[in-house]
Length: 415
Image (cartoon, rainbow, N blue to C red; front, side, top):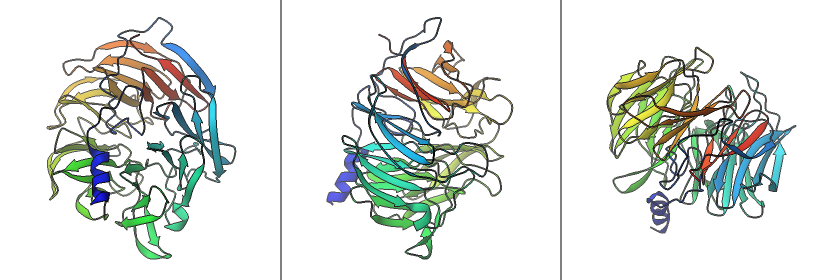
């Protein structure tokens, strides 16, 4: 009961102040910032004020911010490095590293892809070769390290491990994609680790890993985990790893499930992928999921997670290795397109203060209104170079965004 209470507390709605972006896609993995974030309606002609800029190593892992620390996960030379920064200056407070030999099967990025997660006194990171670590946020002391790809016989995949860990209560849920446990063949597709010790709590499913990150959700007053694996969307019990339901999503071959599932009000979800897979809208409870629509016409995105604002979902439709993507607004309950800004470019987005902040891979950032009626651009700037694939973070009016070599902190606040 005490363990269940901890999970329930972790899932309970809380007033997250402007200034916190503790995991991938923000406070609740929706891409929406805290309710009290306030952004300027326009930017100076030269773009938003640069608070600071610093050199960084390789990787596509986004920065996270919690209180007086920001956390950067990147690769320098032959080491993966987790680093705590002062978010006001970008200076290093502490760092720790471990060796890596990772080289991708496709593409040139050999750094970590998974955004860290901060939970209480710990920050959890998951490297490209499946090295899972926890560190004390204040001191940087390494609490534990697990080599999940070695221990659970998980393949590295096209680009390495890229599903960001989820901390729910006192457990860390990871889409490992393993095929063995305790040295024997067994189901280790999704694995739960004890946050305090790093010990294995349970293993579940025979699912290969995806690049989509799991999401915490409350269903009928009970804590659950919603995950998209290589071939399925499923709901799990974080206490036991029991799969409550699943439905097919994905296909074999050179395809990728990269977008995190988007929750649509209570009891609804939207999952999307490119490569001929398309999007699925569904309603669900603890007993099962019912598909309400399926289409690859309104949305089929490579890795951009849709952000739901009000009764609309916003996303970039398309692929970065194809024609320029379209920014689209659709009804997530029906899949009906509301508007489409063609040739917009590929990238990712977040929402705050009734606005969208879109980070394009060519280094451009765009500010637009979250308007279900039409595309309404407010401002545009280009503070970075090419290959902006890491998801940005928004904390206290500051945008933390990086490319292959630089991390920049921009002031987007209304002040």
